[in-house]
Structures are given as C-alpha cells and as structure tokens.
Length: 264
Image (cartoon, rainbow, N blue to C red; front, side, top):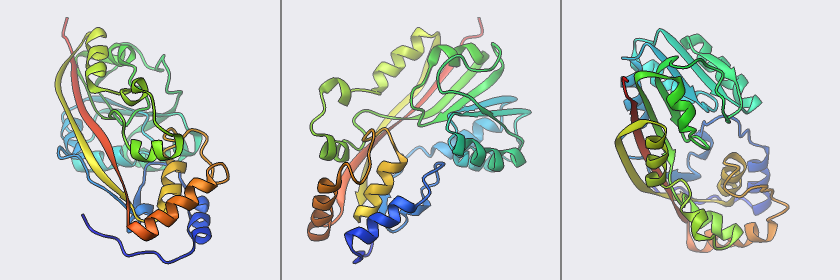
C-alpha cells in the first residue's frame, strides 16, 4: 500500500475543496493521492469484457456514469449486436449517454425499481457493478434462456468503520445486509443457478478529511443525509485524528456473482 504525502492544508481548505468537487458518475480519480482501496483479485472489468465480446444483446443495470461499462466495451474489441444501459440519477444519465453512445450503447433513463422497461427474454447478458439492489426476478425475466447475470456487488458491512464513526454501532441486521448467501438465495428463488460466488474484504485508507467528505458525498447511502454542517464536530475530530495518527483505515467488501437462466 502506497503512503500518500501528508496534506498540510487547513481543515477548512480541505473540506471546501471536497464540497465543491463534482461527485457525479463513478470516476474515482479525484481520490488519487488522497485515499486508496485495494481492488478485488478477480478483475471485474476484464471479466466483463470477455463476456461482452461473446454476447449478442447486453444490458448494464445502474450503470452510473458508464465508466466501467465503457472500459469493458473497449477491451472487448467486438461490441455486442445490441447494447443498453439503465441509470436513474439525471446527472449520471447525461454523463453515461455522452460516454456510451459512441460505443454503440443506448442509455435508458429508468428507475432502479422494477419493472425494467424491456421485454421478456430480451438479453443474453445482464451486468451490473455495485447495484443498490439486485432485483433478481426482473433480471431473470429479461434474460433469454441460457442467459447470464454477471455482476460485482457491495458486500456486508462495507466501510462500516467509517459508517459507525458517524452513526454509531449498527444492529446486526444492518451489518448483515447485502450478504452473498442471502443474494444467492434470492437469485435461486428467481430461477437462476449461481455458478460463481466470491467474497473479498479489502483495505481502504483515507489520508485527509477532504477524502472522507468527498467519499460520503459521492456514496450517499453510507451516511444518509450527510452534510458537513450536520457532522462538523465529528469531522473536526477525525481531521485531528488523521493528522496525529495517520490514515483512517476501513475495509470494503465486494463479491462477484455469476448466475445463469435455464434453457427450459
């Protein structure tokens, strides 16, 4: 793990910069030199590109700004015959459209909730990276017989060291949310067969308070309703801790899931 140089700017300077930064899409380049996170060993984007190169009709759910899908499409070499992506957040829809249209992918502005605006059996590959929730019954409906759902999900108690710093200890049912065993059961109940399921816990480091603020503004479900004003005392205390003790360490959890629909 590389150690970022200490940022000697004041608390107010770091926080102001983080509050003014753009948080649309899933480009995390702003964190370079400010925060680090180990990546899962499997390499989701590369694996997705391999599947895209073999697919005829594909759908990427909750695509964000389209960054991950765009990278996978470029790596695939051969684009799918039909390629669509959904996104609910208007700034991300615009960003994804600009990024994905030149790559032959139509971006559909659609809620994250069912029903999906597609016909039964429309796609032979459905993908998603870090969906808020995987609606497996709808995924199974839009998959063609023999089709595949391939995704990387956020796992249980991800970055909870930071969550609980601001919100206090969370109940066990909250900590267990997004457990891969539960999502396997949901996928199987929808008629899908899970053929791969891998979970990893990955070290994260926040090197300054600006990185914490930017992260909580960007990943809004971590501390719902987060604003600097609402959590100013905690932020000032954490700033002092980072300056005196070094980076704030947390751990993300990620799991890879691949599930197939039977051919009837």
